[in-house]
Amino acid sequence: MTSATTGRHDIVPPKIEFRDVNLHYFSKEGETHALKDINFSVAKGEFISIVGQSGCGKSTLLSLLSGLLGPSAGQVLIDGAPVKGPSPQVGFMLQQDSLFEWRTILENALLGPEIRGMDMQAARERATRILTNYGLGQFLHHKPTQLSGGMRQRAALGRTMCMEPDILLLDEPFSALDFQTRLAISDEIGTIIRREGKTAVLVTHDIPEAIAMADRVIVLSARPGRIHNIHEIHFPSVGPERPSTMACRDAEEFKDYFHKVWTEMDSHV
Amino acid sequence: MSDQAPETPAPSIAYQNWLKRQGIERRKIQIGRLLLLIGFLAIWEVAPRAGLVNPMLTSYPSAVWRGFFELVAQGNLAMHIGVTLLEVLISFAIAMALGTLIAVVLWLSPMLERILDPFLVVLNALPKIALVPIFYIWLGPMGSIYAVAIAVALFITILMLYTGFSQTDPNKIKLARTLGATRRQILGKVVLPGNLHTFMATLKANVGLSLVGVIVGEFQASKAGLGYLIVYGSQIFRMDMVMAAIVILGLISVAIYLLIQSTERLFRR
Image (tube, rainbow over all chains, first blue to last red; front, side, top):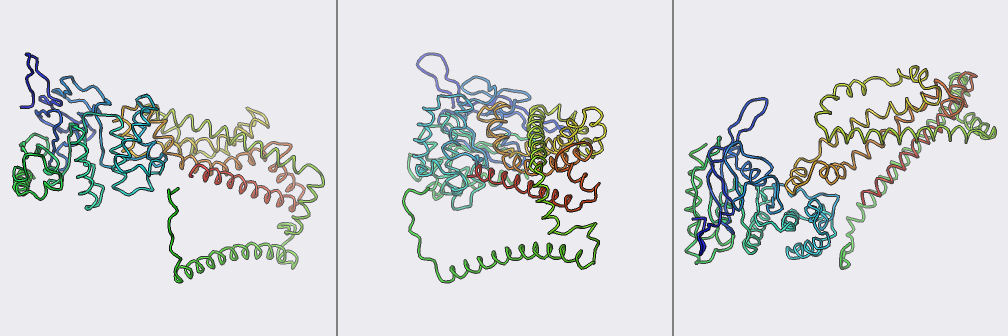
């Protein structure tokens, strides 16, 4: 399903693949089996959401993908190659925007290129273009404290995009925002990610958000985290094209998906 | 800052009144402070003259004032102040530089930090004044002054800075790690710039501590400096000279404190 055969006999590996991944955490209190036998893959350009009870290991999945953690057993593959530490190919958006208050918005966006030792002039031009696209052109030289929550989250997306990743990991990136901003920003950021053809993995405990943004929703069961179910999300009532995040929330299929995911999560309390 | 001049509406009467009340309150506070100072000086002047306290023990402001000019006339007050100032600045700078270096090394090597932790706690709690005689025997009169002043300020510098470093927002560190930062890059781009306020707080604490160290050092052994003046004045029972030296010490610490505060404001902008 996620791998396509080309004209010849070679097979294009999926963008992301988890193969029998297990993860154990160790601490003084003991051993935690955080993830158990995780198997799934994500196609290029696909947007998937991962939902589950808190503590089910959904953020851990992202840490594995970003290379901050290594699996205890199994393999995490990107383009068919095992993940070995953080790579500029993978952009990570965290719960907090974590903008550095001592840097301007533009300087914040340049953090990644600085760390990676990229060509700074090109990076500066890229960052300016990206931030301007996100409606922050007037605020390039402002400090983060002068921006609203929604603008800060857009600046954080700009910082991620400045590395030109082709995979985006989103770890509840909207949860620090108030509800109104959250709806608007998730719609905006969802649109940007689809427009730019990025592969995205969103971790959230907000079921509507998970359904509205994604092509597939993965439901994880509680500790040890296992894949309970994977839902394909389609909105045929709106048309063949993927509707915007906002329009998804109004589609008739929405409440059915919500009901299914909700009951599954509920049965695993 | 803004691109176009914002149109500010004329302030309302209520707002003007509020501003006026704020101004009055500020003035009341300033007058209160001034009255307290004048009252203190007046009581200090009147009580010994009225025979309520022994002027031999307390001296009085006008005598201190005369004592001050007597010292000036002898032509070596500037020298005494200069000697103390130089000792304070040198030991202050050494304590800051050495303390910062050690705190950075401890942050870079958590293992070393855990090994040294109990020793640092004990050394910090130990009253460094107790070491004065040892320093005197080991290092002679000049060396012991610097040694005490540095010892008094050094350990608190290490502990304050290290605590600040280790309390750096973990989300910012995680973000830098997802961008591929090494531990050194995290230090340079997140921990150090994020701890400017810790650095300033440490500087302020150290002004006082270096002064304490230098004065105590001068008590033990010196031929010049304000500490020497205080000891000498008390030995020949010239309380006016002692008090004049103490007032000058107070003015010096205020001056250094204000200097640091204005530097801080420069950085904050």
